[in-house]
Length: 281
Ligand code: SPD
Image 1: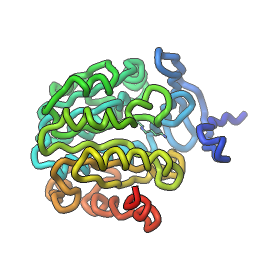
Image 2: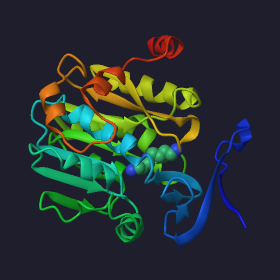
Image 3: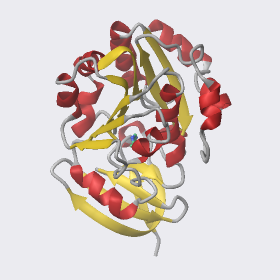
């Protein structure tokens, strides 16, 4: 018998992702969402929230390395880092590879994501016991509203702008993150696919350009996400992602699967049509 998981998030646009699995390993209904873990035929274990793919063991590094190392190799002294979302632990794992990081706060609204990932994804959730880590089980939007002038880098490792993550795509949230940053801080946010989601990116760009002196978009390749591509917003009070990039820090990172100093620069080179789209918005 063959079992297929179907991601139907974009069915209204005539698109669907289908992944064959061997077994549904776990299924939990939390206060916020349904959380499933599948053992797939081609992609190892796969974490799914409300029937939307969050992570597979096959390509998680492409996402987590890129959401973290770009900012941390640009900021001159990334000592205080905040991750919003990211309950699987993959982003935290990459943050802690940087010796300059003194404090890594993780604010995740759904504690059951952390628990299920500790059980099924030890390669992702391996950093929660690091002494530099503090976990806050809170709404990320509320969390940043109460902080001022503290973080060097904030990374928003969110799901899509529906359900619990919707608030993480709103202008007020970006303003509050700007206040929570120090004078030279950087924010990175998960910013969807330039192939499929320009209607979402349009608002992200327009809001962030009002708030941050410098805005850039870059991307990575994740075959199990819609269109195989996902982008990030690089919102910065001071640093330029290429001019202020420290390639020596990139070289010093070992054991990575995707990120290197060439990818760092290449990730900001965008298709012509999308470059024009960003200029207009
Ligand atoms: N379309 C799904 C996008 C999910 C992005 N975040 C995943 C969390 C990985 N830590």
